[in-house]
Length: 148
Image (cartoon, rainbow, N blue to C red):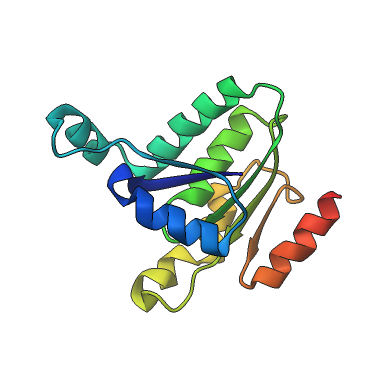
């Protein structure tokens, strides 16, 4: 498991504790952002979440060239767009894409972020069997069983 987050390494201790408590053990991949190094801080602020995730996953693909991946993201930022881009670039490397539809955090933003049209646009050109949205954890468990 790799956990690719757009959060900075300053949050590593908190995020490691959280993921260890709630998710299977895995490698955290966080943004390199430091107030002490102005250049890295500025770069991290200017690279959007989508571009950051795409670039980082391309690096992981190079590290592990024979792996096939399952992407699990959510609707709060640009996971659908980033993961669709990676699928289109590396269709043989991405087995599935699952996006959790987040509700109850910011209802105003969620009206746009959770639109079916958004997902259809992001995943245009990605086969329907490769991606899906889920709202409940149980739906994800069912999808994982389909891969076995």
